[in-house]
Amino acid sequence: MIGESEARGRLMLSREENTLLTRIGPGTAMGEVMRRYWIPALLAREIPEPDGPPVRVRLLGEDLVAFRDSDRKIGLLDEYCPHRRASLFFGRNEEWRLRCVYHGWKFAVDGSCVDQMNEPEENQFKQKVRLTAYPTANWAASSGPIWVRRRRSRRCRNSPWTQAPETHRHVSKVIQECNWLQGLEGGLDTSHAPSCTAS
Image 1: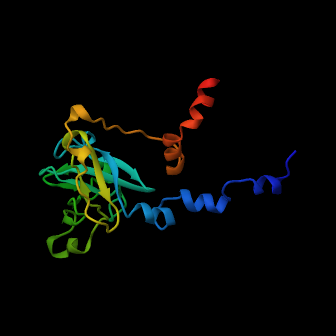
Image 2 (image 1 turned 180 degrees about the vertical axis):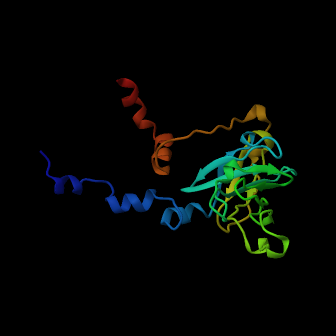
Image 3 (image 1 turned 90 degrees about the vertical axis):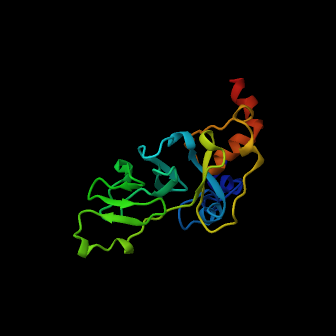
């Protein structure tokens, strides 16, 4: 029987190293690395119509909400209204903006507050209110992913595959209940396939 200290000596990574490598929330080392790049957030077909219902998006440990405004611009905002933290998932997407159903504050795709319907005009302070909002891009029109940039990074260019006709590409979304490294390793490492299928 292997002792605990001997077993620990055989681990590929220590618990601390594993945590450092796999945690991607705000303020974590890998989270900061991943936020430097454009990453796919959702599929364009999930928010197909202007002024349609918002969609929840959980990305890098953050709860967000995506919507398409009247001009078809895509907004990706912090899910919770800064006024009373009501979920904007339940908000109304109307007239170019997303309105919180709790007190009616309204937000543009850039996160700016453009209306405070529950405040008298002389008491409004909407110019001081802002939600976290992330720039988005959708190069493959209706069928491709919506990309998001979380931190200041280089401008992302259209990749050749985004310009290919829909008959020549396939884009899908898979929800995996694991950390990013397990998902990556499972997708790239084919050596586990024979042992999984042999049983």
